Image (cartoon, rainbow, N blue to C red; front, side, top):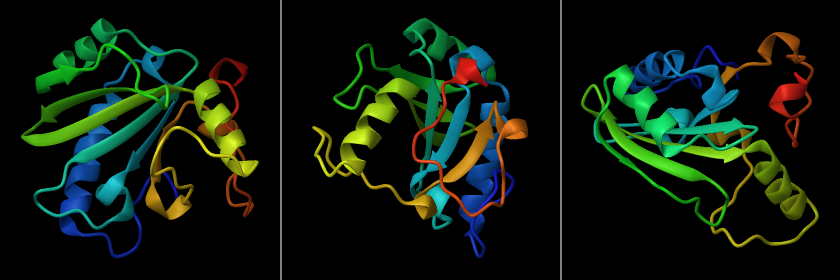
Length: 166
């Protein structure tokens, strides 16, 4: 699965939301995150007209509330509600509307993601519920490192590299 398409047979609503998300992410300053995945029903290709867009954004640091809200306002988002503190996964979320479609965008540091993945891969549990590592549940969407990462080699990377290390 590439960053340029949804799963084969994706719904019309998934395609429309994917295009909206692509436009929104294209307006995101690189400092806010270097990796983005579209998840949920849109990423699986099964969204309907009532589905929201869920974006997961990873970087070396969590952006401030002002940075997150500033990007969304500049992009034309409305009804913006931003968390001020991370939840138990270490992620911090914003909910908004972009062109009349609800969007949930969550940021997490790559270090926090690596910690949770190492715990899960070692057979441990985390304080989060619903963690599931399934490539088919998300669509890689934007990568600051895409040009340097190998593609099509059949291997899955379970722990992302730090953004600053390219």
